[in-house]
Structure formats: structure tokens, C-alpha cells
Image 1: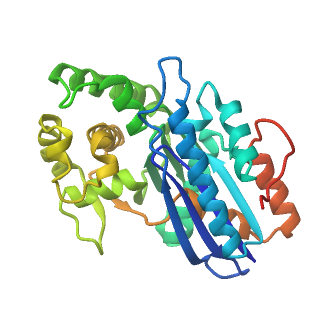
Image 2 (image 1 turned 135 degrees about the horizontal axis):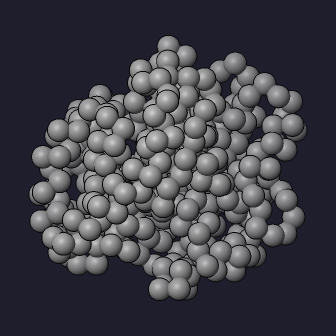
Image 3 (image 1 turned 90 degrees about the vertical axis):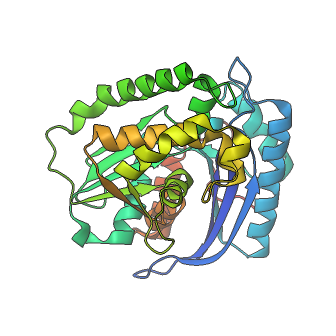
Length: 326
């Protein structure tokens, strides 16, 4: 069967179309990415501003058209933390549905962590052994640990790079005291959950996913064919990121223009995650949440049972509980 997985995040709406066959890896057909730029478009009261909603509607509409062109049998569309946590989420979701025919669901933070872990486990295989997963999105950061397909521990924290930039780093470049306060804030939040991992076996493999980690790997000198993040090199680059304004950061190799403004916050979270959990180096996995959804869909349950399970995970805000959008 052919599915489309549409992930609406703070920077873009990303559609991945895949062919699924039992016993085989998901086979990519095409990928469409449309900018949403939601991270800096939230009012003081937590609502997405009208221009951002316009961009979101346009992005989802473009993705829906692409899914129809590719003749997908099923479209699984969901929004992550920025839309999920918006004060006007219901209004946003209703408008997207009215204008595009796609009703966005949303995953809990824990299920984001669980499904991303599932993708990384499928990518590296059982030989990876006990695995620690770290993911930094625009609105949240996820941490998961386990030695099977499903993690024994999965957490989501409000430590997304876009959210932290908006709430803690107002300047361009940010003031030194704001950077120091942000680092303390991140370490405090991670310190509060570190004890939950204290009795677990040390991971054999540490995996990082997300665009933020990919860019940090490039920024710290990792080759394209062996992306990994080294803690010492990341620490060396942090002062330079903190001193630079957006214009200077845009010239740094590996940093995309759409993430220039939030790469410092992302680097702070990555450094704090690696330090808190005693990680010297993390492999960057090319698979993440979208692939985790696909792997979940491929599990050996009958198709309708799997669809029902995913429908339960992707919590509908209101209206009919449909998984397929056309």
C-alpha cells in the first residue's frame, strides 16, 4: 500500500510518501516540504498569529495536492508541539480542515518519543542493543531509552529550539546573560528527569535525530556520509554561535537559513542533553518521527487494526475521528 505521512512542525509541513510491503523496509516515493515558520509567530497569549495560520493552511494544501497526485491510499496527517500547544489550536485545525480537507491530528509528546525511537530501532536493527534516543524539535525535545522495538522510557520536554529562542533569547545577537540563563534553565529541566534513567543499563548506542542535530553535526565538522555529534567539538562551537548574530550564523557551513535564528538554542539543548546523560558522541539517524509512523503502520497486525491503533494515538481535537484524508 502507499501512504503519505504529513508532519506539520514549527518550520515546515513535510510530506513523505512511502510504499509499504510486509517484511520490507518502507520505500520512499517522494518528499514535499513547505515552509510554515511558526516558531516566531506566536503571540504573548500563546496563539498562532493569522499570517502564520495562512502559511500553515497553504503548506498543508500543497502537501494534500501532492499526496493526491501520488495516489496515496492513506494520508496520516499530524501536527507536533507548536500547533499542539497553541492556545487557538482548535481554530487552527478547523480552518485547515475546512480549506484543505485534511484534519490534523496530534501526537502526545510521549508518543512522539516512542515512534521516533521505533524508527531509529528499525534503522539500526536489534544488534544496536540498549539505545538512548535524543530528538530536538521546534517546540519540544524527546528522550527515549530501550533495548526492544518499544522504549521502556519515553519523555517529552518543552525544550524545543524554536520555543526556547522565542522565550529566552530575544536579542540578535542575544545578550550573554540571556544565554547563561537559558543554559541554567535547560540543565535544571534535564536534571529533574535524569534520575528516571539512573537505574537503566548504559546504552550501547546513542542516537540523535532531527534537523537540529543534523545541522550541528555538519557545523562541528562531521562528513555527510558519517553524521555524528561530538560533545567536545560542540562545546568548542557554542561560544561562536552565542556571539554571532543571524547574519553571521547564516554564513556558517551546515546551518540552513530557516534555522539560523534558533540554532544557538538547539546547540545549548544538545550540549546539555549529552552532558546530562554522559554522552561523548551520538550518531545522527536519518530516520525519525515520519518513518516511525510508517514502521508502526507496517507492523504485522491486520491493516484495519493498525489503522485503529494509530487513530487512537493521533488524538483528534474535534470532529470525526478519521485517519485517511482525501
